[in-house]
Structures are given as structure tokens and as C-alpha cells.
Amino acid sequence: MHDKVIVVVGATGGIGSALTRKLAPTGAQLILTARDAIRLTTLADDLPGSILTIPCDITDPQQVDTLIQKAIAEFGQIDVLVNAAGAGILKPYNNLEPADLDQMLDVNLKGSFYTTQAAAEEMQKRKSGHICNVIGILGKHSMATAAAYSASKFGVVGFSKCMAEELKRFGIKFTLFYFGGVDSPFWDNVNLKVDRKKMLSPETAANAIFFALSAEPQAVPMEINIQPDSHLFF
Image 1 (cartoon, rainbow, N blue to C red):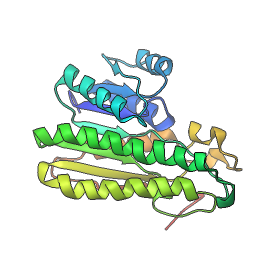
Image 2 (cartoon, rainbow, N blue to C red):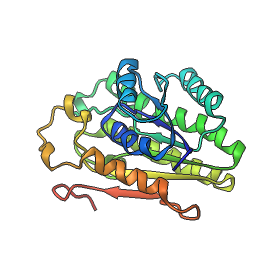
Image 3 (spheres, one colour):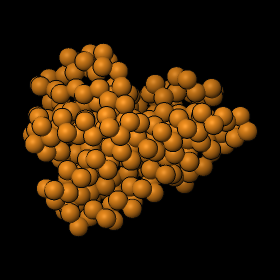
Image 4 (cartoon, rainbow, N blue to C red):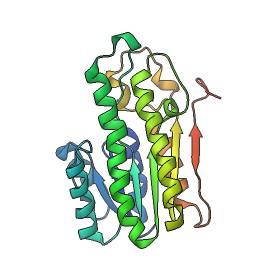
């Protein structure tokens, strides 16, 4: 992990911040991005080493291009992209407004697409790279009230697998993560009764991502599915 250049998107979220805290002591070169510049700076100040923070709204492809070009200007390459940003709206299908669907598609689907596309362009030049897209279990299984959210997440799975096919000949790996409920700020504004004490911790998710990044070069952890024992999908 030492000296790997790693871009963490959604670095101030539950999974993103747990992952950055695990990666920072390894000597990795970290580029952290999220929308909130103040929270980014606060996070970076608590981490060892030199951390590059770049505020970015991933729904804007021009801002994403700027993010990637700043990373290249600073470090000359990108070895790893971790897409850990996301938003959640869980409502009955007939209560969903057009704005709800737009938000899910803009943040979860388009945002992940833009960052993956931009990072892959740079990785392809070096014929090396690893893209980790945090999907969530509702990108693999359906659930009532998750129509808009799952639509966006199933879309991420679709484009990730298509890009993986295109990019494997350039030495670019993809790992998709299907975590069950993770106790993170995702749930703060979700109007469902959930027992967050029974959820996965952000550290469990971060450990899984770290495992994938630490695999020997010839090993490709293509999909990792971890769920709390209180709520299993098969």
C-alpha cells in the first residue's frame, strides 16, 4: 500500500472516513474528496502524513475532471479509485417525486460513472489500476420502498461490469462491494425504523475494501458481499 496513489470519493462519509483512517498510516498517497470543504479539512487534519483534499461535487462532470487532473498534477498517476459517496431515499414507489429519482440517479449513478470514467482514462495510460465501487446490498437485491435507490445502484453494477470487460486488457481491476446496512450518516435522514446497533460498522466495510486493495497482484476480488446476521439476503 505504501506510496500507492488512492482517490477516496465520499471521504467524509461513514465508510469513506473509516477507510481513510485505515489507509493513512500505511504511507499511501491519499486524495480525499467530498462536497464539504470544511469537513474534508477537519478529517485530513486528524490523519498522519500529507493528505491532499479536493472539494468536488461528483454530479458535475467538469468538477470531476478537475479532481482527477489535480490528482495527476500532484502525484503523476492514480493507482486506486474508491467510490464511497452516495445518497439514499427510501419511499413507497407512489410517493416518489421526480426530484427524488433525479437525486438518486445524479449522485449514485451519474456521479459514480463520471469518477470511474475519468480515473479509468488515466489508469489506461499506465495499464494499471484498481477501481472499487461501493454498491450496497440494494444494488444486488430488491426491497420495498427502494425503487429509486435500487435503480441507481443496479445501474452502477451494470456500468461497472461493462467497463471491467473493456478495461481488463489494460490491467485495470474492478471490485464491487455489496454491504448490508452500515451504521453511517446514510440513515440519519431515512424515515424507516431500523436498529442501527445491529448494522455493520463502517470499520467492517473499510476492512473489506482494505483487503481487496491488499490482494496479491494476480488476485482479483471481483465482488465482496457482507451483511449483518440480523438481515440476510441470499
